[in-house]
Length: 306
Image (cartoon, rainbow, N blue to C red):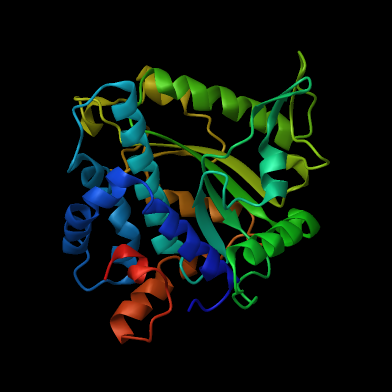
């Protein structure tokens, strides 16, 4: 049994990852690799797992370059990012979700990109969402009831909610153009500016400029053969995502001027300390759980690290 509503949502998020067949198939090998990097499982070690996230992905890298193979690889990378961020965020009022099934409707409406009367993009990517009050709400009996409460709180307390949309891509070439363009549109919407030529962001009365915080981030493996050391500050890929409002990340250690490790995304919580958890709480709950042998709190399967 989870301890509160935010942990119930986190458990549902983790459980949803197990529906991705390739992620589930690779879990034993990747779990063994990740556990080998933990040692004493301190707070610092939990956070620093982000340095090995790309290596964990590439551990079972696929050579299948078909459309289906690329899609499958992308889903696995997203799942690894969601798993890692939830591991660090456990015990806080923030959670990481993949896709639209668990994302509250008011948030989905606020990020929907419209062209005149047509919704061009309404499903979120990977979302880090910080909710007021959910860490004090008890868990409920069903997923339907959970979503009903999430929708209600998201609508009523939207100005107190922090949202970071994380666009995940396995490679880092032409794909960097897409998040660069979305980032430009979202920045305009966040400022409340009019977007020309019939485009707009938000519907049903929900707009990003009313949120407590909104930012857009890019997270890549990347899978290119040149590896992380092959990128320079002047590389076209780097320049394309340089202006992301919430940063540019990968699963390797940070390289100055090129890309930050995914763990650095938590520093953006300092942009609005009223809506995001205190950075000192990141990784703390899981580290304490492992070190003190507390009764089970985090579901499911100890966040996939038994």
